[in-house]
Length: 331
View: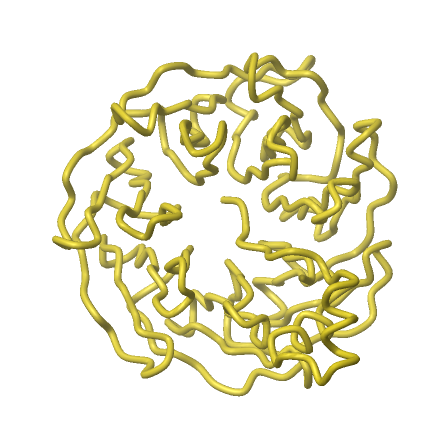
């Protein structure tokens, strides 16, 4: 899925700082110019500058996976699958200061538009669970198909989409009634989401049939499948999982997993424009807010590849801990 990165640290933030800035602006300043990578086997978040030089490491809970900044930018929220918890990392001190208990084997999450509620896929319990971040208390649960993973909350906060890897569907959940209202049939083993075309399209990666499903968000029907091919690779080795959208909304970048490539797709035409060779099992992707650099975690070569978005060429690949999962760019 695309991460919920807010606007980059800008002149406006500098002006506010000079006038005894808001706490949110100060928090954004702490993370600006930093890249964070969760390492599942090292139980750490590794910290890099935007050029890929490692600058530090943060000890967290066991098997860190998905990450996001809190609404105010003061914390990094990280799902820890083997701790059954969400780790709360203070950005200013670079330390984990607490946890929020979750269900059995949490995987991915998204936040409500106001940042107060976390919606988490609980893989081993086959449900999506909602948690209040302030009180650290569970709010409600919604049953899903087997092995839920991707979670995406719409900008109006009314709907959540959740993938079921076993059922090969996307669940449409009404967050008001707390019920599944529709199941959208997609490809084999759907994993992650990104909203595109101004919210008119929901893109879904299908890991086991080398495709991305494009879903019409008005009718909740699949309107197109984008098929990926890589010269010299069997279809079974092309396993799309992570995606991220360029800031201008014109290009979707898709990690092709075991094919060790990232695909650049034109959002309007759905044509694959470029394939970029990266490390082994390209998994997590995110784009710098300025749109110039794409960061890709490679889970089986234990590294991260930086790609120049304009030329669609890899700049460098750097060690990123054992089994890097998600990459998050400072706000």
